[in-house]
Image (cartoon, rainbow, N blue to C red; front, side, top):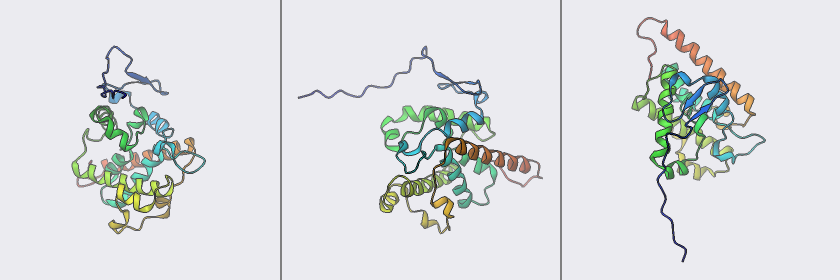
Length: 226
């Protein structure tokens, strides 16, 4: 009988290279990421070239994490229409760490446990600080973004990843229970090439930044950060 090997803990040796060089010229330390080394251009470039669903989607192009992030932001805006641009920016950047750590499917993330999550959260905190969001979002904000994330996953699963509607509902919930009339462009996402996905992500980021600057110039009582 073949002996089963027990899984070994992941050991990170600090003397090994722990940084990644970005196209902007920045060097991001993956173990201790600095907000100063994070650039939105690097994020957009990376996310536009990371495939959702391990690339197992219909179409000539992979459905990228950049497209997914824009989709989640649009869904989040419909779920909480009065929340303002800070909330929507947090939704747009909810998967930003994947520009360096990649997009692991949920079952694999669960199997890896806390090790992967620790890396992901460190980068997420640095991203938030870099772009003027709280390092840790309020629980209600996190919950709303997660709900939008699952709705996006439902639409992607049924339209692109070959899921039956019943299977998608079991995994991600039923988006129709919210009573929102989802636009066809959200219900039926279509993969685009990496350059187009990158441009769309950057355009949405710039639009939200403009809204945030405008809200900061308003008298007190205007939009607040999440």
